[in-house]
Structure formats: structure tokens, C-alpha cells
Length: 528
Image (cartoon, rainbow, N blue to C red):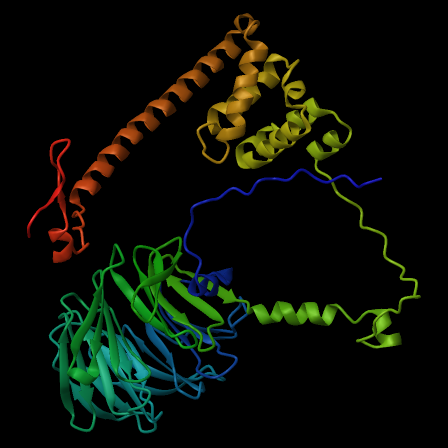
């Protein structure tokens, strides 16, 4: 006896975004962990070394989290006022922070007390960073100055005062330990050289600068401010390469994905946008509140976003190789591999014992079709949840009933409630081009079956009238579209230049062309 084959459900084609490698990659950041901080999160920075812990600066404390921990591993709370700009050194052992009181503190990540304290700014220090040599610290303040400090002696080495407004952005070079980039609310981005002790390059962003980022190659510089993200070519003297305007509100932060070489920007419009090497948006994340800070781990495993409401949102990316390794470890070799070897082929006289087929789990409508209860099968497919969320199931059952030749039997003998359910389904999906061929046949059958008793129910009659109006409107739409299509064909035909004849006629053929003469006379040859 042949086994029952479940109903074949047609595949519904849906319009959606184009799936690319970037889409698959960034959609793998699924696991979201939310941690509530004590205030707005102004800075997030990852340690350059594994396991890539990250420092979160919010309110009057700086807390260090592990890549997979929801509780802080270390907290630095020795601040009298708001802390700003917590940043790791290249070896991940030291952490530097600014503060509202104008002091800069240096912490050991394994301790709690500040190792050094740098004083010299007379207003809030908003941004801090280590230079790539690890022996100097740079800071930007609301007193319009950028200063360089010696880590060991806590002495001020340099002071740059070219800015005319608050300095809110700071970046240093990985390759050059003497290169410092600052951005301020005076709309300018300035590049300083510690060897020359002066500004060597200046770019006008056009908006108050919120964040700057220097590419690892030191060739490109990114500045954000207002709704604009601008890219500058450092090798051409600060020439602007591109200006992006994909956010609806101020762009507050920018970071670089080291593994995929993608640029990420966060904005007050609650979105993080990902750009490819051509600066096209390839993906977007949406969050619950405005974004102030953002960072991604050096191995692209963790994406951390800080928001104005004090919520830290952390997304983890699970590599596809992990799942394959788990499946490979879980499934061991078959028994015959141990006995006969991996490459063993059964001989002709061998008796091969097959495993019994797995139990077949049938859906409700398939069970009814298996017992030839066609009306119940259609009723189960017209249930409210399937009718709204999976209309292709009902269409598949109708196609199966038509194939069996029992569609008219399934539609006959229905009460008012089941008939109204079927009418609602037809009214909603009869104009869908994927479903209309079978649904039009069903509508014709319903009219033929129930036309004599349609007046007995006002509800059934009303739905039949609505179905008629729906089909009439669709016919009118298609007629109008055909007229528009004819107009377009006429326009295209008139705009296409006529191709000239390219057939050449030889002089000999012209000389041999006969001339029509009256009947009874010989034709004469026309001279050339």
C-alpha cells in the first residue's frame, strides 16, 4: 500500500530586500543583551587584546564588561562629577578617562585606585586617548585646548589651542605616534603633528563635529556632525572624497569593523547604518532610543551601542562554523564504519537491513484528506489563523481537491458560517495574481451551487455582492492598464528611429529593368 503524500503547498513569492553577503553577515548579530546603566552612555571602548573586554563610561563611573557577561567585572567610581571618554591603551592594561571637573585619571584595569592624575584643563575634559607609543596621553576639553601628557611623570608636554569652540572628538594614529586629530563645535577638523608642535592640516566639516575616525592605513579620515558623514583623503591634503546624508538626525558616533572593513555610524534617529567600501548603506540596525556611543570588537564578535536613556545594547555574532563543529561532534560514524571501514560497498549477495520509516506527522487538513473527508479538510484550511497568516495552505488544499475532482463536493452543502468564511477568503485574495486562477474557479462554482438559495441569507447575499464589486473593479483596473500600455507602445514606437534600407542596387540591374508596355508589344529596356 502506497503511503499518503501530504498536500503540496504552493510557494508564495514575496518582495523583500536583496540578500547579499553583507546582509547575511550583519544579520548574524542577533543575540541582544540589554544592561541598564546609571546615566547616558557617552563612550564605549574595546580592549585591543583578547578576550576584548569593553569599558562603558556613563554618569560618574566607568565599568568594564566581559564580551559575554551582563555584570561588570570592574568598576571605577572615584569621580566627583560626570566621567567622560574612557579609553584603553594598546596593551589593554591601562585606562584613561576625563571628567567634568577637568581632571584626567589613569587607571590600571586590575586595580581600583587611579595611578596618575593629570591637571591643567580648567573645564570639562570630554575626550581622551593614548598615543600609539603608549607613553603619552592626549585630551580634548571644553576650554578649547588639546593637550599631550607624559604617562609616567604626569607632566604636560604640548598644548594646542587653534580651536575656537568645544573639542568633542579625538582620534590618534596607530602607525604614527605623533599624529593627533581633533574635531570641535567650530565646524573644523584639525590634524596636529607633535614633532612640529602645530596644526598641519585643517578641514571644514560645515557642522559641529561630534566624532572623528582615522582609518588604520592613515590614508582616510571620517568626520561626523549634523546629519553628515564626510570622508577626507589625508594623502591629498585633506580633500573631501564623499559626503553622506543617510541619517535623519545628528550623527553622534562612528567606528570601523576590522574584519569586514565596513564603516558604522550611529545617530540620534535611533539607527546604526553600515557602509561598504563604496559608501553605500548595506545594512541598518534600529534601537529603542537615541544613540550616543558605539563600538565593535576587533574580532567583530560583539557590537555594543550606548543610548541616551542609559541602556547598553550588546549584540553577539555567532559564526556559522561553530554550528557545523557542534553537529560534527554530535554525529559520530555509523556502525558499519567501525566494522567494515568507511569505503565498504555491499556485495550483490548481501542482505541490507533498512531502518523503518519515520512516523509521518500530518496536518489537520491532510488527515481529513487521507480519510476522504473533503469538506472537513477545506474547513480546517479555512481556520482563522491559517486564513490570515498562511493563505497558501488553503489554496494548496483547493488545488488538491481540484486535482482529485472533488472540489464541487467540498463546496456543496455548506451552512452559513462556513460559506461566509470561504467568501471572506475569496474577497481578500481573489485579486492576488498568485491565487486568482483557482479562486476564480471556486467563485464560479459557488455562484452555480448557491444561486438558488442566496436570497435566504442577507449576509451571504451581501458578501456575494461585495465579491462582484471587487471583481468588477479589478476588471476596470486591468482595462485602464491595457489602455496605458497601448499608449506607451505608441510612444515607444514613434520615438524609435526607422531603420533605413541597406540593400544596394547595382547599375547593371538598373539598366536591365523592363518597362511595362501595352498588350501585344514587346517590352523595351529602360536606359540607365
